[in-house]
Length: 82
Image (tube, rainbow, N blue to C red; front, side, top):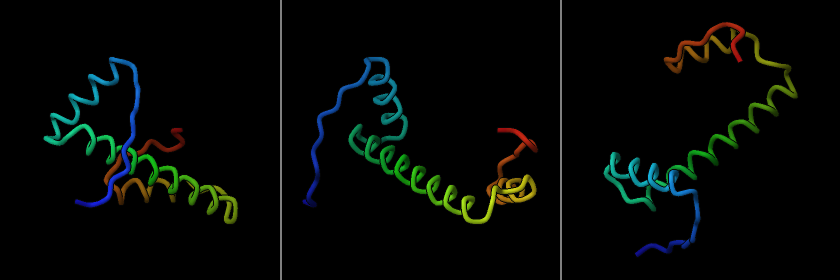
């Protein structure tokens, strides 16, 4: 078995129920669901930092650039929406 890092976590009961339900809907264990959620969060934070660095060097993204990116991702974006 691969090496694993064990954690003990606490959360509000309502959140615990929601996590268990989400894991069940996905057909996975709570541990796997939480691991994937943590990995997603880390990727998002790293992407945000990379985009912040890009904008610091090259200036803010224009609405045109943001709309093109949204279109490439298949996401409808309203111009100027935050």
